[in-house]
Amino acid sequence: MSPEPPILVPAETVRAQITAVLTSWGMEPGLIRTTAEVMVETDLAGVDSHGVSMLMDYDASRQSGKLNLQARPRVVRENPVTALLDADAGLGHPASVMAMQLAMKKAKAAGVGVVAVRNSHHFGAAGYYASLASAEGLVGLVTSATRTISMVPTRARKALLGTNPIAFSAPAARNRAFRLDMATTTTAANKVRVYGLNGRTLPEGWAVDGAGNPVRDPEEARRIIRSSEEGGLTPLGGKPETASHKGYGLAMMVHILGGVLSGASFSPLRVRTQRPEDPDNLGHFFLALDPDAFRDKGEFEADLDEVVDVLHAAPPVDPALPVLVPGDPEAASRERRLREGIPIPRSLAAQLRAVCLGCGAPYLLE
Image (cartoon, rainbow, N blue to C red; front, side, top):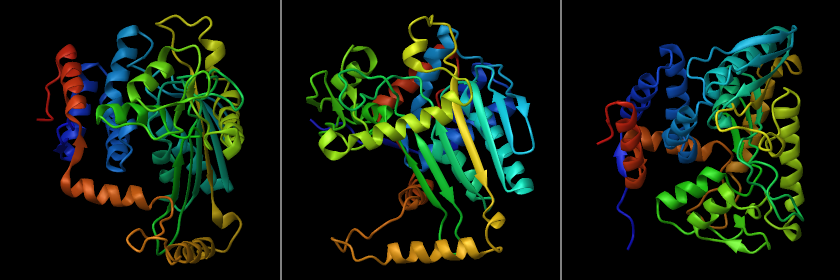
C-alpha cells in the first residue's frame, strides 16, 4: 500500500511552526529569525532532509543537554582576512550566517575572507551559506565537519567519516548564480530518513553492510548508520570500481577545512569519551572571494553566463529532460513550493506534532 500523499503547507506556516517551537525552547528572537530563515529556505530549495524535518533531532539534543539554546556566537581570533568563531555549543545556523557575513565583509575589503567556526551544532544545508556570497557578487565556498559517523572509507568495513558536505556558489549576470551543494557520500544520511518517511526503497549503492553488500531498506540502512559496528553510507562513487576513492578523498578535504582547521572534533575520536550531554563541537569553514580582485568589474559574471548558456544548450539524451546546471533544481523547487506549498509527509507531521506537544508549542501545520 502506498503512503498517503504529503500535506502541502505554505512556507510562512512552516516558518511560524519552526518559530513557535524554537520560542518554546527559549531561544533568543534574533537567533530564532535567522535559524527559521535558513530552515525554510532549505525546504523551499527541495532539501527536505535539512529543513523542518530536523526539529526532532534538535529536540533530542536539547533534551540531552548538549545543545545550548542561549548560545551567543563570538569571534575568538581575527586578522584582516581571517577569523575564528566559537558557536557556544548552539545551533549552527546563527553562527554560520555570522561567519559568512564576516567572510564577505573581509572579501569586499581585501579580496578574500576566510572564517572558521568551532563548537557548533548541525547547521542545515551548506548551500544556503554559499548562496549568501553569490547574492553579494562574491564566490562562496563552504564545508562542514559532521557529527554522525556514516561514511565507510574505500576498502573499509566500518564507517569513520560523516557525509561531509561541500557547497560552492558563483554569481552570473543574466543567469541564476551557480550553486553546488553536495554530500561527499553518495547520498546524505538524512535523505535515507526522508526515503523512509515516504515509504520508498533506497537506490542500490547508497548504503552497504559490513560485507559491502547493498542495503535498500531505509529503516535497515538507518539502523546501520545509527548503531551498527559495520557498514554505512558509501563515498561518492559507490564502489572502488566506480571511483569511490574520489568521494573519500573529498570527504577528507572537507573535514580538514571544516574540522581540523578550526580545532573542532573528529567524531570517531570524540565518541570514545563523549557523554550524552557533551556538545558535539562541530566545525565549519566559510570562504568568500571577490572576483573583481582578479577581473575587471562584470567580466567574471559575463564569462560565467557564457559557460552556463553553453551547458543549457547542450543536446539532451531525452528532449523532455533538458541539461541543467547546479542551482537549477533548487530554483525550480523554490518557485513551485512558494506557489504550491512545502510537502510534509504525514509521518513527519505526526512527529512534529509530538515535538510541539512535548514543549507546549502550538501545532500549526494542519
